[in-house]
Image (tube, rainbow, N blue to C red):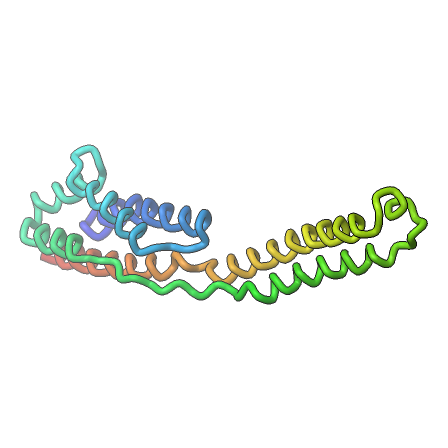
Length: 185
């Protein structure tokens, strides 16, 4: 096997590790920060100098057969930096807040329309019934509109890890090209 093929086997765990860290943050925080990408890259870069890792074996193999390319490879790996990617904006909260307020108002208004002699108003009075209707409908509205906002927010940022993985792909391509040149030497 050539260096290019061996590199692909050494690269996959690194790429998968970084991708997993980015997707975890995306899932948990609905955002991916440059700091997370940098930490994941730093952690994965250590594997290239860890004798127990496949990445180290790859470097050792290249060192024995094409030592002049090892330095280029390591320099490209160390030189790589993630650039910050701006996050897409989250949807505005005003329509969802207004919807919650409207649901609360409808609940309060609806409960004020209950006849005076019906069970609840005759038991506790009109004002507590109106307050209760406002709170119940407001709570239901808040739950519904919050879930709608969260769905829109997740949709707007569903691919926020992708730009960082595209940057990592550029590093992959550069390192693969070095390996191909080492194969031809």
